[in-house]
Length: 254
DNA sequence: CTGCCCCTGTAA
DNA sequence: TTACAGGGGCAG
Image 1 (cartoon, rainbow, N blue to C red):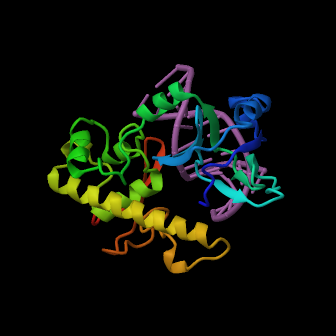
Image 2: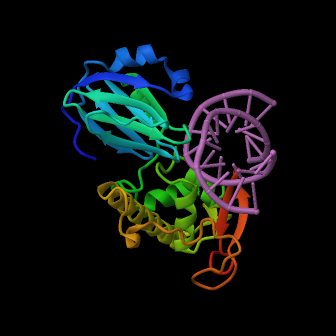
Image 3: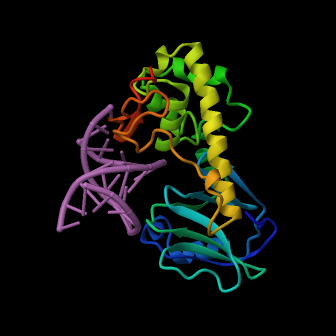
């Protein structure tokens, strides 16, 4: 994203009912107006925009999109919130389904939220040993563990399925019974899948409109129920785990 | 643990 | 027209 660090916020508005329930538009406007952006970072699936003594904690969910708009802003029905910056640009939260969350948090709540997040798979702390240790202590199915943000911060339903498929591990397997070999494969697969997904997303941001199809992230297993596995040809199966659809190949994931 | 809710675009 | 998908928070 183009740099917004150092810019001062002139005004902030929220439009979505869901966001208004979290904080009323007036208090949001007062909370951000006049503050300067001191930094931006990602933690798991969350984006933090720091404003010195407060922060915006943003979760885009599935359909949210954070973008920079030029003068004039972005006037779409789907805009959930925007911040007008002192250089005329706007930081816009655009979200067709309105499930994204944005809130202003003080240092205390920031620390509490941050502490509730597990290890980021793209950080140096995410080692095979760390994953093995988490797995050992969990009675849940491995896919459920991977999707638990308190343990691993950043994998959702789709990437969890893709990582398990890549590692050839059955998503139904008990985490505690994985064994070092499977944990090792899974660790490598998680990192590979997320790196690939991130690259695809970055390309899409850099070339809005139409980007190289070769860069697009194409699920190898997710949403492919009944279609042949690209490795072994067996039909991809679907089942429900923790209320979510899990796609996997019973032929080569075990 | 399960199920429901939020919301809305898409597919059946 | 209805069911379903997504992430997370919450109730049971």
